[in-house]
Image (tube, rainbow, N blue to C red):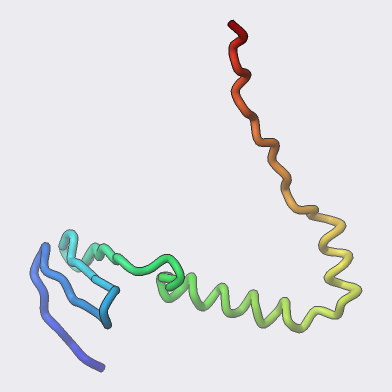
Amino acid sequence: MLVLSRHRDESIIIGDDIVITVVDIRGDKVRLGIAAPIEISVHRQEVYEAIQRENRQASRLDPQEARQIERLDPPVRREVRRPRSEEP
């Protein structure tokens, strides 16, 4: 593991397009700002682990169970409202 020290407003560059900046330091907490391309997902470790657990669980569902789940919670469809044009 690479261990680096940084002060507030200093950054670390990963590759050519990921920048991690120390935004704030309060006591034992550090706030980081992360700039990365949209195709690179960035998660806190506990969120990433929860996503992985959910993905493993979903991959174990048999197709019949998956169809039942889809019926219980159908995808949300949202209407796109367009402003009415004013007539002259």
